[in-house]
Length: 541
Image (tube, rainbow, N blue to C red; front, top):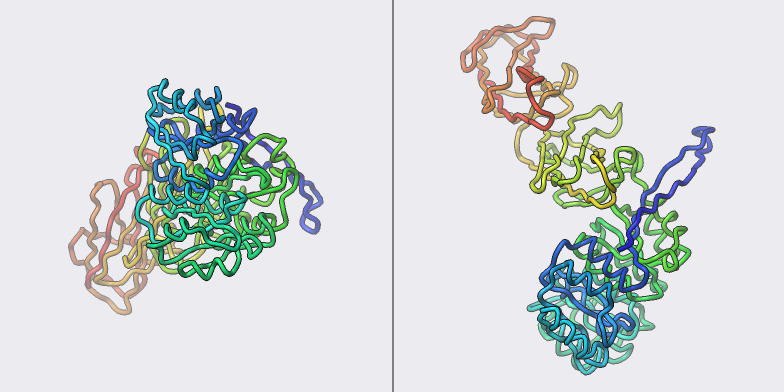
């Protein structure tokens, strides 16, 4: 398998801001092999350590394979390519590596002969063939294999770009891709749509006529000026939440086919390009959308380094100003190329909330995440590390006020190639709770609190939390708190420099004025980097 990092050093001069040239390294991955069969194996190795199933397709023709991505995704299986009469060495090696025990062959024996079946049997791999009299029947049979569905994608059956561009979206949602002629909807496709309430039609009127749409249930057409414009429109319309991008030539089907199921697995999208140029529609898309990970599919001869450089420069998110916007409650993944190349993400809270930032552990790296508020001096709200462990999640909670936030994420690794490890994270907010509002680490930024309400907070070895309340006249006050860790101190302070002596759950008489409750760890030097202590405080009057 040939995989490599495409490290693209682009020099940009910012006129009016600085007279110096600033160097930015944009990292774009490449999954490739010496041929389409080896590239398919490389893609498989990227996404699967092992697999019970594999989907096999003829490597030199696309008709039977156009609808295969949804089935492969359902089976959590890669798509590999074969010759008509024999498995290639690259495909055989990958079947052994994956430990495959079951294979789905797409197409009839005219595409993949019974000689391939015999080879599979000799490898102790059970097989099933899905093949109809033509491409339309094959797509309908694949749809039947998916099980129940009430929405479907309809694509032109005599070319591949539109079907493969939409394939990751269809697969992630469990929708079949059914095929049609330009002016006539085949009966077998019509029958496969019997249970469908809604259809997505990909491609313009030149390849799927308006007449065909009249025979479809509740059709919505998605199309662009050409294949590249349609691919861009699919992402804009259906895949706004796409995390990864896989860049494939728009003039050959093989890499886009095998890459489409990896894209489905990682919530990715297929970007179709010319071999040496990014089409204007894709270029325009990249002005509006960023991806956390980008990989070119195939060798430099099918997708050039020039294309990688152009896409990489558009997708740069290595500083707060270029941070990639993310959706709350959605898992994201990416690849980082070391602490010298941090990745930045940003999100917006429209109301106060307790935000849980979680990172997946990895056996080969420590991932570091630093959360900051947008604007000001970007002082860290908090930081933590996803430790070098085989599995599990490391997370920290932060009580935040409405606003814009960003975080910096990078990896530290003892040895080896950074490109072989992927990170995963999620930003999960919880609302309708009273809580601290970071950064509440000094008097000026103290969180206001009110009597008879319980407030939730979080502290770590470097986090002091300040709360404030006002007395308009002298009053009896009782401060209570819950500290399950017994590692925190809760101090009462009067503005102007007086510490107040009190006992938990005991009433103390306080004169008029402003007061602060300061929460801090007792022995921060004894706490580890990721340790977080949760607590609650409540005031009674």
